[in-house]
Image (cartoon, rainbow, N blue to C red; front, side):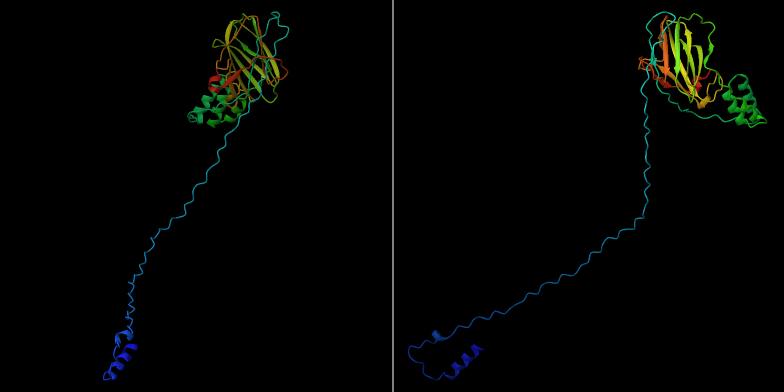
Length: 293
């Protein structure tokens, strides 16, 4: 607006006289250049939507729950030592003694034979019975289910013998070593087999809490096997597979034979607490098949 007015004024006064010394350029205001306000448009950015990846449904799979594992803990009783035998008939000699630990049963492995039923199994049971293998006979009678099998099966358990030596090898009569076995337990009976250098020399039965003394040839190696049970099936098969059987070991290294000297008395105490000293022994589990004759 100022620029237009100034031009109009000059046109009207153009015919007037310009005073001397007047410099029109000194009083003419210099207009400020007009700079238009240019707006640069901002490029539009398209709104790009990135689709979210689709996640397939995962079925709810139920994982199996872990089963707890229980490890049995075995607690072994403190070994009970043996007492020397007082007033030994061979004189006042030192009495080497041994100790015995608890029994542990051995599990039977291997395939189970198919039972014989009918008359075939019945005849087999009769053969076992006549041989004095009463546990095997009872099992065979039960499996046969033939005629009067039940009556015969009931005859197989034998009366328990009294405490004592049931059998002794008649050939080995030179006996200058004494072995006493003492047992203190009332719930079960024990049956012992004593071997001289792998030959059976004596069978011993102890009912409940009792003791037995036998005489053996000295200066020889011996092996002692034993079984525990409640139902007696005779000397050949002892307490059957329901019994527990072991072989004694004597030196901490699993040695099953022990040397018994002539003129000495040995006492083997089992669960006896009123003893004053002795040497511990251990044992290993034995199968019924290896224990029976």
